[in-house]
Length: 270
Image (cartoon, rainbow, N blue to C red; front, top):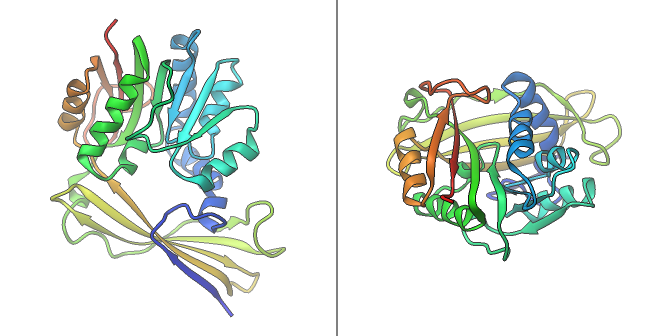
């Protein structure tokens, strides 16, 4: 009998999605450009006595990579389940439960980063601006922000969305999860788009399967994101007080390119 659940929370506690996040992130880094060296290099060059703050830190992999360089780093995330993994994997680091749109840590940093398209997890335009303002407030004068986004390919942002499912390669079950010998099947079921609010919602299915491909456990979750146009992103940074705004299409510093990544850097004035 299949154990099935449906959640509007994308990272539920005890869920297959949350437990498998690092496996999927490693696959993403192999298929696409790995952002960890970029953020690590920035931290080495820009973080001095005030350290680094990662917003939307998730399971803490980027913060941990920066900490291994001997740089002070703290992480903040809205998901208790993801922070539980961060604390279990990297207990010596400082983790904060909080909303990047509304938080106050009472101190300032040399560098604030929002990797892995974390700002797009904020699905309201006003809240995205508030997140940038909170980042600005947590930077020392002269400090820098760096973040990356998906640059929207407008062919895939139409109201009809995308009804076709896409199945990822079958994963081994994460350690300590599921029955012995079971595997994890992940399918992007469909995507709906709202061009008015620039919001898209993806239906993801996570299934624990046995060696006969029979489903032992199934979870359905919805992932909500907001796409941001380049001109809009630049304006939000300017309105939030940032200067020296620089934009790239990848983590190697190449110029902007349509339907590629958006990689942004900016400074708080001295």
